[in-house]
Amino acid sequence: MDGMERWKGKVVLVTGASVGIGKATAETLARAGMKTVLCARNVERLLDLQAELESEGATVLPVPTDLQKEEEIRALFDEIRKAWGGVDVLINNAGLGYVGTLAEQPPEEWRDILDVNVLALSLCVQEALKDMEGKAEGQIINVSSIAGHRVPPGTSNPYYAISKHAVKAFTDALRMELVGKGSPIRAGMISPGMVETEFHERATKGTEDSKAFYSRFRVLDASDVASAICYMLAVPSHVAIHDIVMRSVAQPH
Ligand SMILES: NC(=O)c1ccc[n+]([C@@H]2O[C@H](COP(=O)([O-])OP(=O)(O)OC[C@H]3O[C@@H](n4cnc5c(N)ncnc54)[C@H](OP(=O)(O)O)[C@@H]3O)[C@@H](O)[C@H]2O)c1
Image (tube, rainbow, N blue to C red):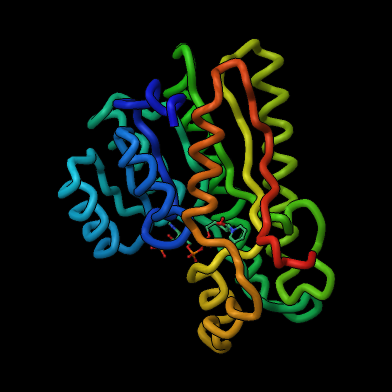
């Protein structure tokens, strides 16, 4: 995509890059010539991805990080600054949900969801803004969900929808704050429907057959979301795509 040319050599941080949407996005952006920071907890997967991408000539930096730990988030950004001078683009992708009812779900699971989906996302934005301020261009893309726009009818994962509604409010408020300051930094989000990843397996702690779950109809691939993220980056710098809501053509609601 032509508009990606101007991002060549710029630094992007992708959280949750070990698997799923984050991995596909990191692959796409690294192959487009961005210096790509790979963040997640699973070191082995990050090193495998590093080896794969470096063998293709891409420039990547794996930084194993537990986003539930504020000090590890601060250290992640310090390491990026030391290596590459800071980030130009932040893809706030890491996220999770746990199946459970509001009446009975253990609050520890709520904390885990909020820690990663909302708090870590917010802290990463704060750190990224420090790097982006004063630059001609910068971009923050928060990975939300259709569940951030409406609670899916009959959902088994309501707290996830609650957290993604918070991501929507955060992104709206951030955009207004940046516009209010006359900043060129673009803040947007992407809201996919069902995508085949490890999400469902993790959400059910392996108690449900995820293959069967994702084969009820043709769902999105992680690469579909990665392509849309690329599009958000590639549009001219005066164009701010605030949200992309996307679902499989077969997803009913
Ligand atoms: N799949 C869907 O249907 C769907 C739909 C709409 C939106 N989304 C959103 O898309 C994003 C990516 O989800 P996915 O479907 O690709 O899920 P996934 O396959 O389960 O991947 C989740 C990623 O988040 C990382 N992560 C989780 N907790 C972390 C922590 N404490 N510290 C660092 N990294 C952490 C995981 O890495 P490690 O385990 O290696 O740490 C992994 O890379 C999420 O925000 C999700 O809400 C997914």
